[in-house]
Length: 156
Image 1 (cartoon, rainbow, N blue to C red):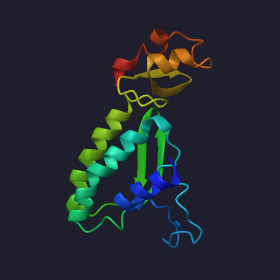
Image 2 (spheres, one colour):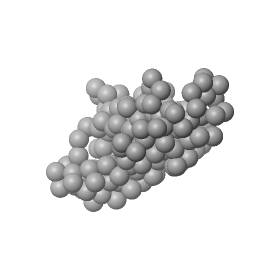
Image 3 (cartoon, helix red, strand yellow):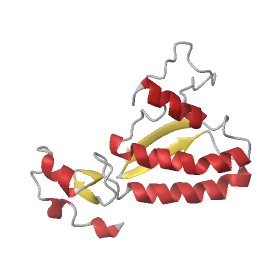
C-alpha cells in the first residue's frame, strides 16, 4: 500500500500504526511507509484482515479500547491466520473471539497469493490455502497436480 493509503487506514484503525513493543510509542521517524498490516501473513489475506479489523472496531469502541488494542503478531500457521494481541477486555472477549473464529475459518479457504475466497487447503510439504489458478501459474507449486495437493481439503 502507498503512504497515502496507509495513512487513511491508520486513521480509520489506529491500532495499525506500529508502536514500540516495550514503550508503546510510535517511532519518531514513522512516515506511514508501513503498518501492522505488513506482517508475517501472505498478501492474499490483506483484505480478510482489514475486514476483520473493521468488524471488531465497534466492539473495541464500545469498551473504549480502540486506542489501547495492540497487534503483537499476525501470521500464517498450518494454513490459517493466527493473531496475537495485548488482550481483550472481558466484557467484549466472547464477541471478539466469535468474530475472530469466523475470520480464522475464512482464512483456511482464502488463497494466500491472490485472496480468492474459494481456495482449497494444499498439502504438499507446506500446508496453505491456494486457488487452482495460482497453483497452476506458479512453477514451484505445479510439480504436483492441484487435485492431488488438495485431496484432503475436506478434513477441515
